[in-house]
Image 1 (cartoon, rainbow, N blue to C red):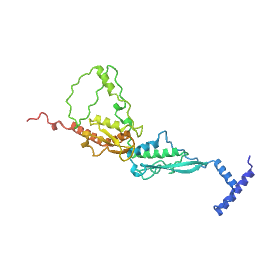
Image 2 (cartoon, rainbow, N blue to C red):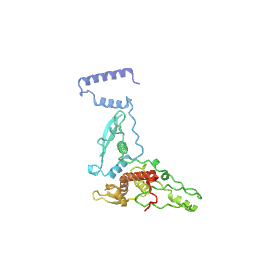
Image 3 (cartoon, helix red, strand yellow):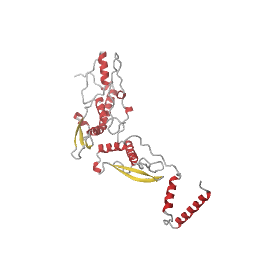
Image 4 (cartoon, one colour):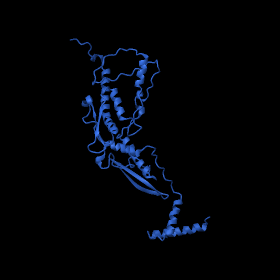
Length: 327
């Protein structure tokens, strides 16, 4: 048990040290043994304020996701593939070294974490006991900003049409529901009116079995997102567009990477020149995904134009339609 006299002796000694340091900074009279004992004592003292908890980074491989995104975007001309991680030591906590990590990307002038996201409410940067967690957190901040700014498309499966999310084949003996007719397209001639006929029960069951889709393909960039190739195919089938073909070749600029472009067929005159062309992508699968991502925007615009044309046609007064014209 430490006596009160011992506490008082140490208190008076520390007071003399403080006076000496105030009068003559940097000329401490501490011996090596005294300095080591004080450093050990500091580690055992309670902190004046508990450090904030480490941010949750979950189980996602954020660094891998950012690498995939950079490779798909072909950021090689910038000199560092579009991203640059920098790890620096942070202030120690109870003698344990902690780490900061920043990542810079081409799309934003400031690093992550930074003013654009990832800082504590008081403006301080989180530190981690391991470099790996610090790097994952930096990549997470960059990915979340890229998604918020629409550099990375966000697709929610819950917003897909109901028939794509879940289709249950009807029991045997029950006729399958008829699907809604597709909007007319100027790319294909209008089909003649069909006569309603009741198909045999076995044909209805077989048709339902063929319509029911399998699992929806996921994006190679994010397993929580739908593949852009799948989205593009569904869009083209819905509007009777010709589904583009993917032409992928080995890159002549970067070894081990690929170039690609779409074969648009009769869609080519309706889309911007050169749309969908990619260069220096990390794999054939990623190249197809990137091509599809770039084609989705103009094709959605074209689909919206078709919907508007159909709406105007259906809302036009009968007097504007010439029936049985006389020659």
